[in-house]
Image 1 (cartoon, rainbow, N blue to C red):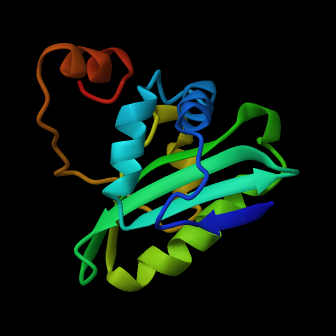
Image 2 (tube, one colour; image 1 turned 120 degrees about the horizontal axis):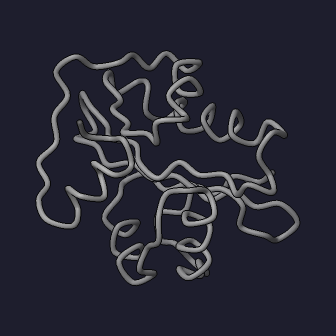
Length: 143
């Protein structure tokens, strides 16, 4: 797997990014929204195998003390081969020196992130309303 850290997102097909996130269980995404999300992230990761986009992640940070990691995804066809570990090793190489790294994960991947030193928060909260809140509640993210 080649991991490309691309701050300018050259040649990225945002439809492929949206399809990858949906296939990985992170929900249906609008490709134009994903393009804006990644353009506004300081850290962007794209994983490729034989020219096929199969992994992604992005993060925002104050570049001093905290980062928020999001949309860590490996396409299901590539899961179970160590690609997620390689992606997280690269991500944590960049983000861990910043101090705190927050992630909000799909419920069934919490154990995976604990391998990288992530801990459950007792004080985490989220603001959302309407369809966004309903999706979070239905997905098991919010009680």
